[in-house]
Amino acid sequence: MINRLVEKIEQMEAPIVVGLDPMLSYMPKHILKKAYDEKGENLEGVAEAIWQYNKGIIDATYDLVPAVKPQIAMYEQFGLEGMSAFKRTVDYSKEKGLVVIGDVKRGDIGSTSEAYATGHLGKVMIGGKEYRGFDEDFITVNPYLGSDGIHPFIDVCKEEEKGLFILVKTSNPSSGEFQDQLIDEKPLYELVGKKVAEWGELHMGSSYSYIGAVVGATYPEMGKILRKLMPRTYILVPGYGAQGGKAEDLVHYFNKDGLGAIINSSRGIIAAYKQKGYEKFGEEGYADASRQAVIDMREDLRKAWMASK
Amino acid sequence: MINRLVEKIEQMEAPIVVGLDPMLSYMPKHILKKAYDEKGENLEGVAEAIWQYNKGIIDATYDLVPAVKPQIAMYEQFGLEGMSAFKRTVDYSKEKGLVVIGDVKRGDIGSTSEAYATGHLGKVMIGGKEYRGFDEDFITVNPYLGSDGIHPFIDVCKEEEKGLFILVKTSNPSSGEFQDQLIDEKPLYELVGKKVAEWGELHMGSSYSYIGAVVGATYPEMGKILRKLMPRTYILVPGYGAQGGKAEDLVHYFNKDGLGAIINSSRGIIAAYKQKGYEKFGEEGYADASRQAVIDMREDLRKAWMASK
Image (cartoon, rainbow over all chains, first blue to last red; front, side):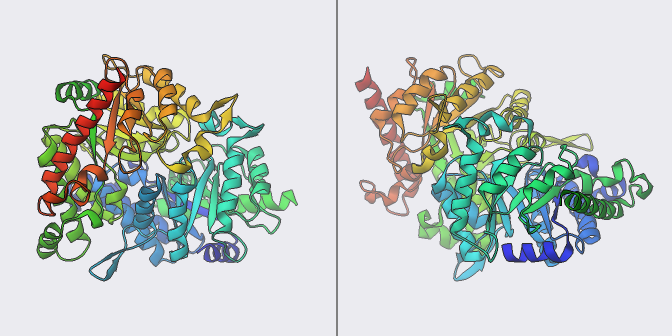
């Protein structure tokens, strides 16, 4: 799956993942109205609206981007109905050929991590038949519990040829509170980064490992250091755009081959129609606005990359 | 909710939470057969079996214990159907007067933590009506992202009079890999513990905070230190029994008032019928075996407590 992700990134010249993090406040009125008319003004109606909204964005961008990253919390907040919209989104994205990174940030002790890995990446056998729960291609994982909480995920990834992105340095303002603390004069995120590189050796693709890292766009200096510490680790970079990460800072997250990083944008793409410069699309044209935002982001990254050389 | 939990613990003289972590391998044959006959040998059948299995245990123990802790991963592994069994378990436990600790270990950047908090502890408004997703009383939370990932959970807890248990020192063998690293000569878990105590000040109950901590039974020396660092923090202690934590070690997790800790047992209670000393109950009597295991655990803890004085 890492090989497929890398190929798609090269082929599309777009190291971009669209964060499918739907919020009720982003939802165009016509989509909400139609969903409520069909399913009722309740959790089921909201789940239908989320799904229709996502479908519009997927249809408008799947030929431009290699991957989508649905943030499961945005679905989980609407209970079972929301989770069902998550699953429809995952399934449909895969149908359209997109690589799906489930942003689930799970992580627990061994036997429990195994269950999460099964639900999100693997399968269960019931009466001799295989069943799959959510079935993403990659998921994000939290490292706080250490190696024995991570290995069960890697084991399932090996079986399924799937992958992980493990949190190393997150994009939020307080991420330094624990992650930047110095241990033998080195910050914790470097220690975690080194571990991710080690774990990565357990499940290598042809040029990069199936085991990636999450490093926020908002800390480019740290991104530069981590890039060197984890040369064969793909880095998933959240925080571009709305959270403040700039294209010129992101060049440091890439290797010289122009690969090694994939930049996430959520709000900036899926709610582009609400933003300056995209007014002309209007609410009805929200999906076209998303497409334009992807094209603009690709151009923004390309220019920064060219300028850095 | 922390006040209610403390009251129930005092009234029942049982600082015990039953970990509802169902595994297919624990499931008595008669339950599986009935569920498969009714719903088919598929994910729906498994979800029905989980629910019936849990219901048996809840019915057999709700008058003896203050709380249950369903581990969501064990449900999530069976996809949407599993999540639906999770919700039925939460709802039914609350109907029976049990405090429900959702062991979900969520945690993310601010806006995402807010969505998780909404889904597990809070409510959404749709068309002027309130809807609740999973609606536990407490959930477990991962601190790796720092304060701004925690505050949204606390905000929802304040609105709902609900609470958290934040991971400080986990029970698994590798927990030390990051959690024990020294920062200014103190391990990371102490730094996190201090933060939990600070966060706890933001949402106090009458004697303890709504914001608790998770500290594994398998590290009693660290439990002793953390008990002192977080005097008004309730400690949720996993790792008793199957993972190796012993009653005599657990006395250090309590304050002098005999309160301040609640000990989890999962396998030791819910799969008691498979264990030495409980054979007489047989598979059909799995729920009675669970009841006996709770009584035995209560006695084990009580003896250790008396011996420590």
